[in-house]
Image 1 (cartoon, rainbow, N blue to C red):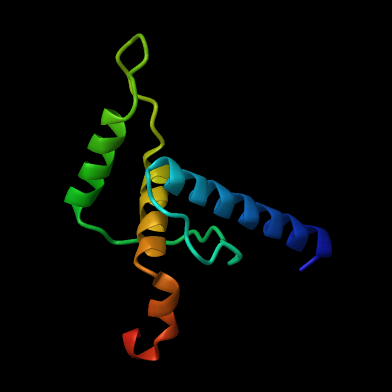
Image 2 (cartoon, helix red, strand yellow):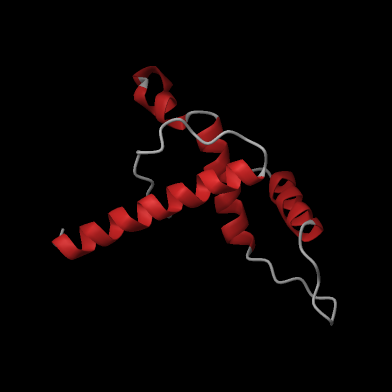
Length: 104
């Protein structure tokens, strides 16, 4: 990987980790202990119950104000990604995937 690209990815990873921990503080939660871990954006297809997606959309709408026409401007895909990322961090995904017994 070219040096500039790798450096850019590292800066983005550190920025996202700082943002993630700042959001945890705003929500009254403690920052993650391991704040030096690089965070990467991974694009994947995730299967989830329809009810989970419906809950994310409903809660995102409840936290957002509609515009003057009554329309909500919410990026549902981003919100799903944020919720999954938070879940993985809170539930210690790093330890889970380190255990070979958890693999199918």
